[in-house]
Image (cartoon, rainbow, N blue to C red):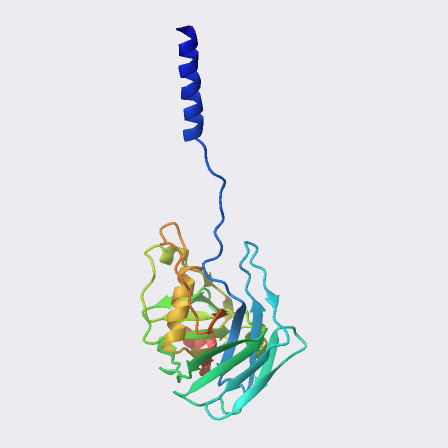
Length: 278
């Protein structure tokens, strides 16, 4: 009887051990395999254009590496313009004289590692024009001769989607655009993605003198590019504990390409700081 009890207890312990076993964690491969990431596009701001190519960083550290020795060109609707790699690895530059083909299509062609990639976008004109009553930031007087700006990264429910740059110091707009790290303001036609975003919004709040002036740039976005950015920000800027599962973010690069090749018009206006609080 005693031997039987010991046997039963042993069986229970063995069974319990089997039921509580946790299999080793398996990391699934990335849902999609990307061989090339594209940044940049065509702008009416200048005829000199830049495209940056890299190998996407799909590992946890997110590191990317430049892509050299690719064949890159852009068709402006009439001609195929070659882009040459600059002294910066992975950065390709070309001159698009016909950079004001409004409502026209610009097409990017890339050949790399015997693979071909294409992308296309439409050049939309900036609308509405920049005015004091539609600037994407606010201003308030904080003393007799000082004004504080409140510049958000995102604004929602705008008449048209656009990107803005506000220059209030000695920053060079050309250096900013060429750096691929522009502190844009994004205006979206759609509403805020979640109710919590208003409390986690990013702002810049520079303090300026009444004697200062600022320069405002507005850049147009095609409908498809604005939709891409809105989806992208749902997985980056607007992520929170109530967010849904990550969705696929698809740009306009064909095949195993990642990113977005865009076309953008621009407008620029200067304002005296004192006029911002009238």
